[in-house]
Length: 139
Image (cartoon, rainbow, N blue to C red; front, side):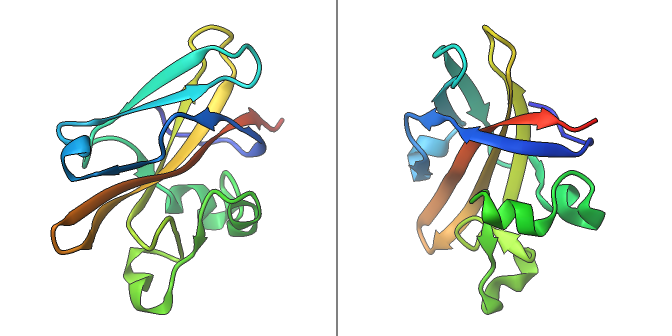
């Protein structure tokens, strides 16, 4: 996993084996499998709560990587409901939202993943992956 600092364009969404993990499925980490759209290789990403990912605001602050509009239009995140604005203007499932960059281990295509993590209700901690998309850096 790595942060993305250059402007990018979003491509096709990869196929995920599973996109919602709860309680014990997250401890000590969630193993996420996705299929590369270019070579059909199954890739694995390990998300460790409170260690993996980078705040999504880093992407849209000053339109550094993507604009808020591009994040919303491509379905990476949604507008946060009024009562949850302390988590940011855009989130996944109204929870703290993070992103990561990764690459296919076979063909090295670049991918961006977006997920949220937190307590949705008392006794229910959830990790929700909005998806993993292929991306290309813009010149």
